[in-house]
Figure 1 (cartoon, rainbow, N blue to C red):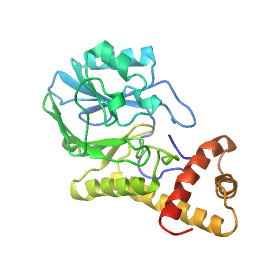
Figure 2 (figure 1 turned 30 degrees about the horizontal axis):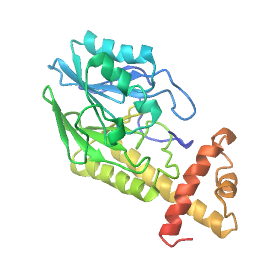
Figure 3 (figure 1 turned 90 degrees about the vertical axis):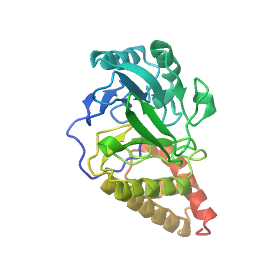
Figure 4 (figure 1 turned 180 degrees about the vertical axis):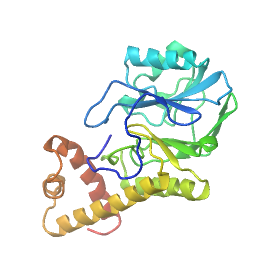
Length: 276
């Protein structure tokens, strides 16, 4: 899910299905909306010389899309060997069970309710399929079960909804927790500094070639919004709805209900830290 703010950086000119890095190919789901941008990015990831692939976030329960993902892998001479989920929102995970039927794969996720098979996912896990290496990074905040996948060979990170290719991510009360989200952004910033990650392969929107710049922008954006909301509260705007009408006045009103959930998460954060 996306907030309305524009994200600077170096996105690709268009969001199109196709190769994004040497190992990652995007198949764009046909579920574009104000909250999903151009649609969900389903990622097929594989070593260049391997006949096995991993699919991350099969997307919505759309038979045509799921079959397109399978066909795209097969046309490249690959069999889907494993399905992974960044988190449980329907636009990423609703099609996972059907996709598992089509491919005969297990589904691994942090949330046990989303898994098909005995294995889950946890921070620090290293997933190896056909020579491919993916490292699991815990990034709660957007949701409690949010994960990212570090792809060291491409100096890339698959971020689900934690960092988007355009706009900023919703941290929606009650599942979203802003303190956790800020910690997750700092964890991703460490990947860009310590591990040389430069490419963001997001769950929505275009690929970003300046991962550090994107994460720094997200942190600055959150600090700015928090300051606005703290000031609004001090000025007498006490309910989430009042704060939204004041702080998000320039945002399309159709997004205000989602913004209210975000404001509730921010008010919780400010209260927990004794700032209001």
